[in-house]
Image 1: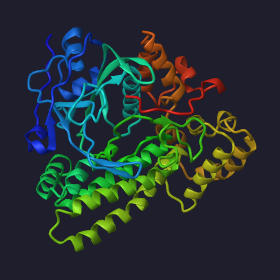
Image 2: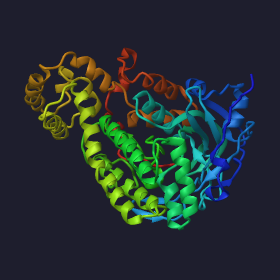
Image 3: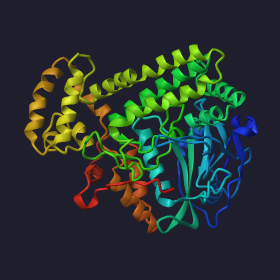
Image 4: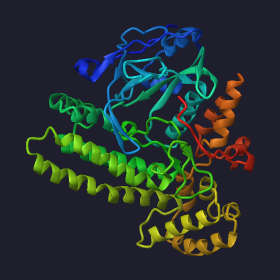
Amino acid sequence: MTLNIPFDNSYARLPNTFFARQVPVPVRAPRLIAFNEDLARVLGVTPGDVQEMAEVFAGNALPEGAEPIAQLYSGHQFGTYNPQLGDGRAVLLGETIGTDGVRRDIQLKGSGQTPFSRQGDGRAWLGPVLREYVVSEAMHALGIPTTRALAAVETGEIVLREGPMPGAVLTRVAQSHLRVGTFQVFAARRQVDSLKRLTEYAIARHYPQAEDPMGLLRAVRDAQARLIAQWMSVGFIHGVMNTDNFSITGETIDYGPCAFMDIYHPNTVFSSIDRMGRYAYSNQPDIAVWNLAQLATSLIQQVEDPEAAVQEATEIVHAMPGLIQQEWLARFRAKIGLTTEDKGDEALITDLLTRMAHNSADFTNTFRALGSDKARNQFVNPEAYDEWADGWQARLARENDPQTVMNAANPAFIPRNHRVEQMIQAAVQGDFAPFHRLNAVLARAYEDQPDATDLTHPPAESEVVHATFCGT
């Protein structure tokens, strides 16, 4: 069987100012680590033999219909504007229209230098590739919008980071790779015609119901408000919410120093480069609003009546915190088994979270075990849980089947940081069994899996991961 990717490219039809045409740089000895057959079926991709897929997904061979490009964008990185970024280690092969009718990008990440590499080598090492594969697929299984992983390939080459590391390439799939920074670069350059063209393209591809730039802003706001609340509901910390990592589709993108909390604390930071806590867990809603404001500033440039646009954009952006809070409350209601609404629900949820923070309770395990001794045993002082649970039980009296609601809202399994690191260390030694096991278990995140209970355990003191790194 021959690998077939039914390309139907649209971004490559845009003017050359939007990208640089760039073929992937071949690698020495590609070897296929993983191929996502379930995703391939959705994309309409027909797999080929193992070596052929290794060659294509490493960038050594271009499949028919591919039009490889590196996309241009800019962005605010930790609040400071960088006027030109772009795909410095990624190449967009093209797009497919899947069996579900959705258009998606297929991108190679770690495929060599591009005109946007900025002295980088354009490569990725094995660890971040496997982390993004595992975490992005876990996010999909959790029901959270995300880019996905189609394939992972070893390159047979060494990448120099803290030391020599085995190289790898990830094949990433997204509804598109349009970011806030894609709009910012044209706005900053005052290239209004390009900005208009990009806006029209984004509306046609993602939000056809949006009639104008402010309609696009409103649609992006709504999608991102839902996404941020979903992150919060599973204890996910993106780690680097720069505007160039902020997708207009409302998908989670760019899994660098990301992490899931074990012990709950709202100020948790894992990213080694986030020294001031800008992207801490509890700050993510505020940063999402800040990023949306940067998109608004860019979109306004193309509007004929900028004064009216500023007023409308301000109203759109100012409504975002309330929307995030609504989404957050709906998701956390479900996490404690509630389907009805009561004015005291937010205080009930906040009280639980405060007690969890004060008692070093594991976020995932506490919510999964609510109502049982396993939940109270997560607390340093179990009586703190008991005091909360009395009021909660009284509130549950009006609910029909709270346990079913909670089981659907609270995963049993997340990609815990220490397990991901252990998986990476094993893979560096040539053992990919932990990688494949993690993927298999996390694909059924909401199911009790008795043979995988070890993956629900928080880290021992010697296993705690204190910092995560971009590392690609």
